[in-house]
Image (cartoon, rainbow, N blue to C red; front, top):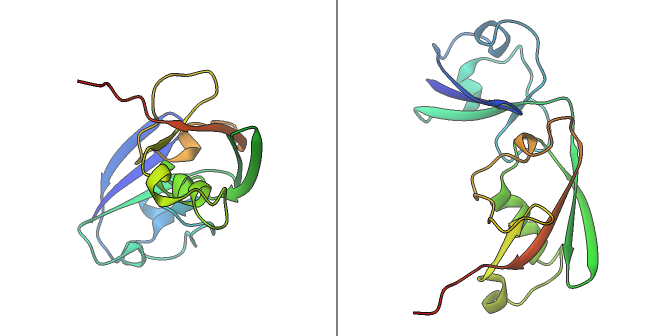
Length: 148
């Protein structure tokens, strides 16, 4: 299985037999998080525990990251595993547990780092944006669209 190992420095790609343990494949004990999960993986688990597909994404990180999203003068916070994607955070922020944005408006919203003009890639792990873990601030804004 191909394993994409994300951390605050980037991504390493490893190929591993499904019967090896995660600790063995990664060269020792680490706190690992499956993509879009809020509980760490058991490093004694085998590679096959990552799923039946040909590839899997994991994130090396110390703990949960509290993400605070700002939208229309309000802030909401929630903790996510560092392997959670921007897509997952956006779904929470616009959904019923977040700001409850109507679907038509939500379709045009994106997440950005405060003060930045570039939309964050939906597949980015939040742990890459919070290298020291702990906290991450994001702005929920309309996507920049060019009229043609």
